[in-house]
Length: 445
Image 1 (cartoon, rainbow, N blue to C red):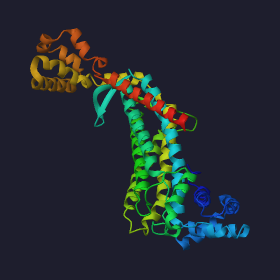
Image 2 (image 1 turned 90 degrees about the vertical axis):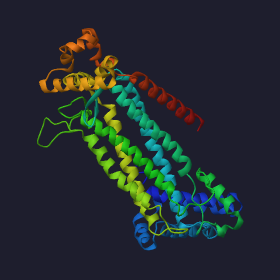
Image 3 (image 1 turned 60 degrees about the horizontal axis):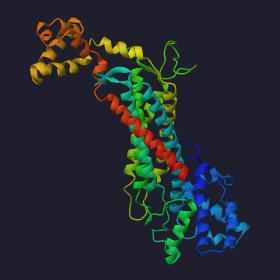
């Protein structure tokens, strides 16, 4: 991702636009084919002095102006007749925006590739732990029991939604920017749309019906989508770090020499990957807000708002890719302690199954009556330190309704998972379908 948004790649994106524009001019008969060799030779970013262009950009207002000055000079030295066709009909923002779109295309592919790996790993873990019991937790306290498979399936389902968002995003964001000074392509006369179509084809980008110089919903949507992805990854990291607390100790990040250690406490096994992800999840939302704030731009070309995007969007991409990388590492080596999960569930003295007991009791006492009795018995269990099962067994009234076998069944967490199994199966089936569709698309492309 750093390479995608490196200075060299940023310049190359603009140069790719300029070369494609020259080819489009030739393809539409607006320029002679003899101009291409000189322009092709000059459109290689490695030949340019990045530091000098950066210095000149501070005075010019954007990177394209000094780059185009240098590009034109290079072309002119090789072929004077080709120089007038450099950047013909375009404006600086066309080169910068389209160059950035080319970078976004590569960046989105990197993120989607990592998301696909994460989805596959989550699917494998979901299947592996479909029947692994653990306490469901609400408001950071034990609630009713769930399966680890259900928890993981929630992560997987969210990741698949993000992959769908990226696919939808491409159709709106991976488009050409080509409007000339005010969006009319006036320099090109009535041939503007024809040349634009040829330019879009050269760059393998969609051709929008109108230029979007001061309509910045496309880069803002990109940022917002990345913000949603990082939010989900942060949620997963938060859960894993909570499960790795000493008092819980149900799941851990992979261990390795030097990973997660402490400078003063040798026994520590810190969730360092989760820490990086959570840092990214904290930093990205304000950056997304900056991108949204930058959508309010003036007339046909904005002042300042467009400039905000130049550093902000790459930073969001970098933070997102870092978070995705660390999550993939965590999931590849995730350590699950099934015994500890079962022990923690048991340590709750059966209170996690109060809902199950209330449901069974409602057949005899009605819904409201069962709730009141269950609350009273749960209070006795908490105050006495007994298990709720034992409290129920000692209650004469309850034993009129239930046998010991009934009580054992009610307080077995495996019997109160509801539709967890079918939900997990549905999520895994949806993943398999998305996977098949993705592979089919790859074969067609």
